[in-house]
Image 1 (cartoon, helix red, strand yellow):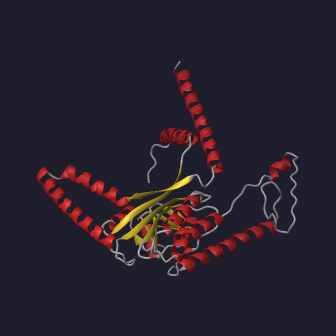
Image 2: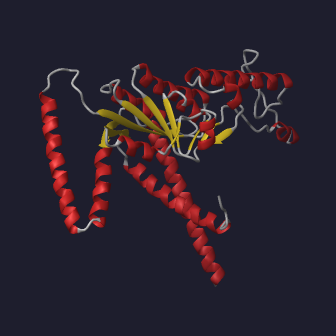
Length: 349
């Protein structure tokens, strides 16, 4: 009886997982067919969020007398700030001094650099107002992916520098391969102590089923025009000449990658780092892949007193299938995490 109950529970979980996968696939298909115009820019002032954190801690830590004194001082500072802002608004000269503005963008890259679609909109929005005294901070996370996709994403970042606006890239977890290609465009790269950086190399791999097809008497025919239209294939018999050409193409792509890094980050000894290896934040600083070891949160906190910080996001309106898909995806993650924890309970860093 116990076996039947356990089997029933397992079957229910399996069905739930399959339904969740189906919903997620429907979500992906729906998002691909959605027009790019179905979105809008959202701006959040980060200073206010940081101030709220501070006020919450103060209310819990300070006694009533100290809290009253702090609130009194805060009101005085607020009045002084408003007077200063009012005075600045009456100043008609275009060169009037103002606080630096720090615009924060986020890039969470997949293999196709799909986040580049949002990034281009966000950069376009920021460039409509940003000036040379301001700064753009891109919080970047990516393990790399398709060459042409990440090349385009890196070109989007170049638009910021071409306008003479300082660009900083912050890496908290990973910026490798195509991710580092984007990062090296920046005037300054900062990274967390154990962030992964580098992987300046190119890789390609594919299975070949030729022997399996031959064993089962299945012919595979492919017709091309041009000697190198197809060099290697998954189903045909690959030749040494085809493999050699394919490898040569990879080498040429690697050369372009190295030239790009050398052009954008001349302080780096490219031949030393272009081996496909990765380095953690502190080691990456030693070989000048980055300029400072600090998290994005630490960087923003340091900027908070002297700059107005705005987080800019290009957001799409989520349809009902998307909202259902996100809920199903969260449920699926929980099921898989619970299963993995049972299968490997003693995994450690």
